[in-house]
Image (cartoon, rainbow, N blue to C red; front, side, top):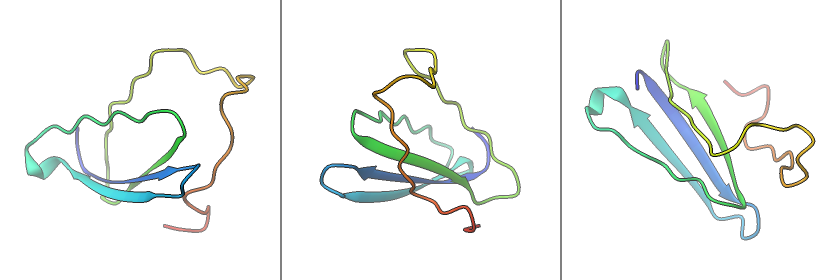
Length: 77
C-alpha cells in the first residue's frame, strides 16, 4: 500500500523459489494468494513500507500446520 517490498516465496516441497518486488509507485494493486506449502517472507527495501495482510483464521502458535522455515537470515538487510 506504500513503499517498496521484496516478497520471497518458496514451495517447501519442490524448493521452487520466486522473488517479487512490490512498489507503490507502480500505481497498481497486487493481490497475492499464498497457498499451502508456500513459505513466504516480506522485506522492506524502502525507508518505510506498509503492507495489508489478511487471513481466514486467527494466528495460533500451537497450530501444528505451521512450521518454521527460514527464507531471510537475521543478519541480512
